[in-house]
Image 1 (cartoon, rainbow, N blue to C red):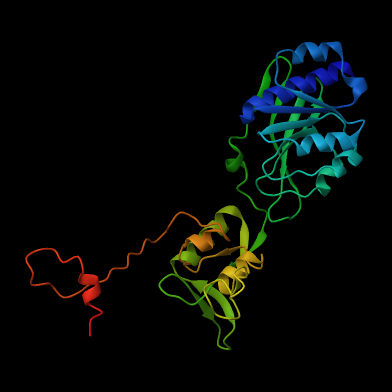
Image 2 (image 1 turned 90 degrees about the vertical axis):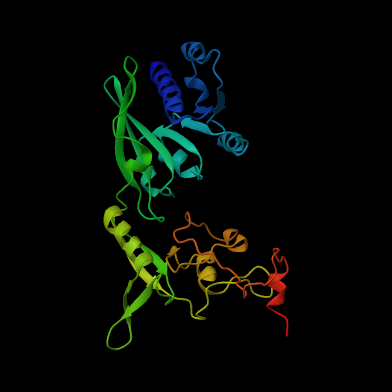
Length: 292
């Protein structure tokens, strides 16, 4: 048991370096910690918390601030079911059936290890839009060879979203995008450069697109209460749509309620006025156009 724990600690230290995170929190059973393990941890920035008291271990998790790889040795499903794999956290746990029942996201960084002889096989686990957990091989580790990630960078590995459905919010607003209708007036699709860009991504990343439009037909502004959004922004804020390719203008207030991509189509608005007869620059020309 002790040599296995020592190997897990070495694996965790190598993975921490590979992920580029600064901290390492080890969740161990007190009986498993050996003198050899302490030798390995000498001069290392490592926090040890004992799983024998799961309440204390959870409290230690809540105190984490810097990026930290959390590693646990216990492979029981009961331990895994008690843990919350929050966004932005890094985890290394034994491979167990309980992983399939966890709540994960596309950016989750949950890694598992499984011993095969002298090696440990590494898998990563994530999910698209709260769907079933996706598990895929990423590499291996051994005491002699160290960590070997064979499947490239994380986002290069997660290019198959397994057919998950995303809902696109849209308004008829050419040239950005518009709905396609059948003979009975039912929405059957969309066209325009922005929806077509999403359709291209759907084919590349293996997801499907459903369409939705706000009942009020609005783009999105704050209601009188100052907190509730209407229109497309309301659908985004309430989670009723996943994305909008309607060409929403990026404003400071909207950026506080939704994430925007880099601008795809910069638009400049300019006031113009008749040419002034004065030889010098007229700094008040913008006011003169309002004179009666």
